[in-house]
Length: 344
Image (cartoon, rainbow, N blue to C red; front, side, top):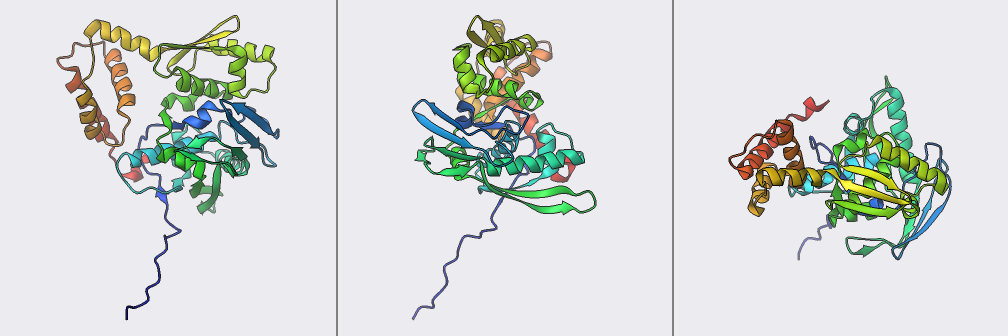
């Protein structure tokens, strides 16, 4: 008679450790397309309902308000780490363990006591904001309400300073499915340097809709809706005018002509100039070699970084653009492989 052996249940303490140095920032496509996050600096307690492209979205705030676009930094950080390890074929989990200081530094925040307090507030808003939607992620339709994260908890805390040291975050199934389904886009690291909430939202839309095209046009009224702005159209148009004046949006130039907003891709313009000068066109096999040279990196993001480095170096003549790019990727990866303790 066979021994009765208890079924081995999945260890509920399984978690994913966020420890990837210089992970390339990723943003999920669904929240880039739909105005889920608040742009307001004040607590936003208004329930929002949208009907966009056949999808219904209802966003309900907690008692302390809706999650803001700055709170979204936490999701971007977790997603970027998970994608980097997914590209290496490592084990994943929707529960992630992070070092609070690493998160603050990676998202261009301070590390003072107030910054840790604000980080805790961000977790509360992410957990408390409820979304009811029928948006599909990874071919799965989520129709019930859910939070942007399922839960969070402090694992260790510095009792002398009252600062969080290590935390665990459990992502929602909706967010985790979007990662597994590779429904995300690489975004500029300069995104975290944008302080204005509207600037961040404008960049997201530019990245989503303009992407690698030369340009993208949108009516000011449609742009206001996609931004989720609560301003009237006159004030919103004024704010967009300020965005056009500053031209601080990474990778894109923004222009306002009457009621039409024009986005122009600066990288595509630069790539066009390079192609004309030296006819740089990488072979398809080069990208595969680049992935081997820099495992875990987004090779297309590295390509843009390499082209910028080439320009900043005075546009030297290249014997082989393919070999030069692979060498750049290899050096980038070698420089990133450092003991984790040196990152602080």
